[in-house]
Every structure is written in C-alpha cells, then in structure tokens.
Amino acid sequence: MQVRRVNEKTVALTELNVFCCELLHQIGPNAQSDDPAAHGRLFSSPTGGKEAEFEMDWHDYVQPELRQIFQSAVEVVENDLFAFPAEDADEEDVTLEIPVNHLEAWIHTLTQARLSLAARHDFQEDEILRMFPADGSSRALALFQMDFYGFLLECFLRELD
Image (tube, rainbow, N blue to C red; front, side):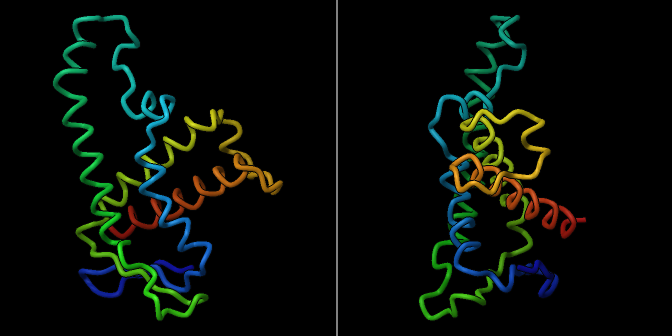
C-alpha cells in the first residue's frame, strides 16, 4: 500500500489488496462501537467524577455535540468507502481516492476507531507499543488494525501539513 497525493484536491491509497480493503471497511464499525468500554473512552469524564455539576453540564451540553461531530466524521468516511472497491477492480491492486477536504473526517474517525479498539480489548499502553502477536487471535487482529489505522493517521496528517 502506498499513500500519495494525486493532485491538490485528492489523496490516493494505492496498491491495496483485499485484506487492506476489509480493514478500511472496518473503520466505521470500529469507530461507532456501542461497547460500554469504548463509549466510556470516547466520552470520558472530564473531571473523573469529582465535580458532579460540571459532569452534568458536560453530559447535557458537550456530549451530544461531540457525538454529532463523531457521527458526521464517520459518515464522511463511510460515504468515501461506499462503492469501494469497485466490483471490476483487480483484487490485488485497488486504489481509493479521498478528497483532501475529507482528510480531517478520516483523521477523527481513525482516532475514534483506534480508541474504541483499545477500550474494547482492554489494551494497556505497553501492549500497544509492542509488536503485535502473530497468533491469529482477535486481540492480535485488533492490534494490527490499530497499527494500520495509526499509519493512515500519520500519512493523512502529513498530507494536511
């Protein structure tokens, strides 16, 4: 897989294989997890429960807008992926073109997906920093997804610079 600028308005992910395509399609579902641990991580308490009134205001006023921002970012990513990969595409050399003005939504959604995966699988920092185990477990796949999404985040942030 390569990430390259096609022109001033488009970034392309090229040379994608079927596995990479599937990981891309999992970004939205991972970002929108209903898992309580993921929800707690995405909408974490600003005071750790120490200031009840502030927590209530956060829940009533900030959290709904934050939820809407998260959802709209996911919708942009899912729309970009709607017809991807094309049915007539070669399974070993697929390209996804992303409008540069969508990169911010991709960055938000990839971050949400990474946070959700980490919370759902209860990863500790030392596990995330290590090489992922190649044992075929769901935790190994989740770590791989987090690394893959982290790579995309880094590339997209560079493109926005």
